[in-house]
Image (cartoon, rainbow, N blue to C red; front, side, top):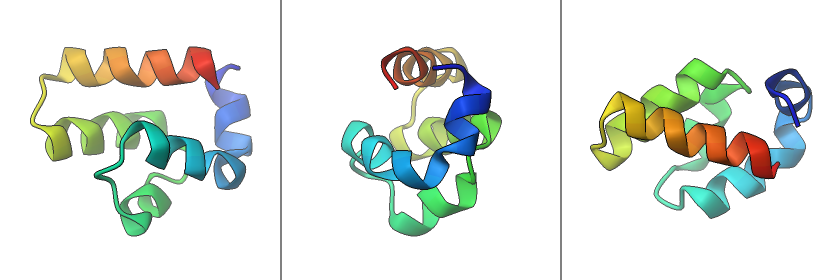
Length: 65
């Protein structure tokens, strides 16, 4: 699935996001609103990983979605 599709289906994919990143709150997932950069930033901040690692995780999610 490409990111445009993920963004369009964000409400349906929120559960998958929370399964992958269980520490994210409902509010944080809602704030992302399907925006890839916001998701990368929140993953980076919440998990204390480098930007490259957050990008890798989001890319992995994108391929699996």
